[in-house]
Amino acid sequence: MTDRTPLSPEDALVAIMVAVSVSDEAIQTSELVKIQGIVNNLPVFGQYDLDRMREMASFVFELFEEEDGLDALFGMVSDVLPDKLHETAYALACDVAAADGRLDQIELRFLEEMRHAMNIDRLAAAAIERGSRARHTTL
Image (tube, helix red, strand yellow):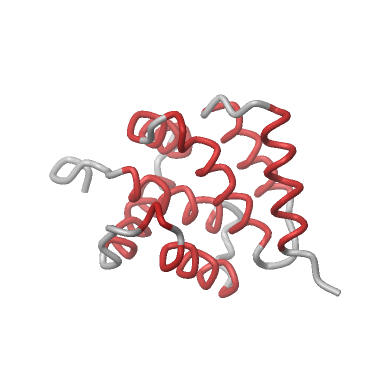
């Protein structure tokens, strides 16, 4: 896929959301609905071709079959995304991870590795995580 068509910044954001969703090997409907809603509503995706979402999902699945697939994904995403969108990527990953109402150890580890790979400031990450938790709290 990337040999023919390089990742766009929007592709990178979608790939991160798909990756956190599949990180626990159990894609939840709530996570897929969250990804779709994010792509349909956030301004950063205003010009995004929705047909590429399925292609990005396949790309992530293939990448995760490789031994260092997660590191490769973080490297590609870091290369493609402008620095100002690194926190955006982290916020989207947190929202998708929280969409099913629980965070398991694998998802928490994914987020931790993402923070390090994308040089997300720990204080900024804590604020993003707190906001995500507040948005996804139920009664």
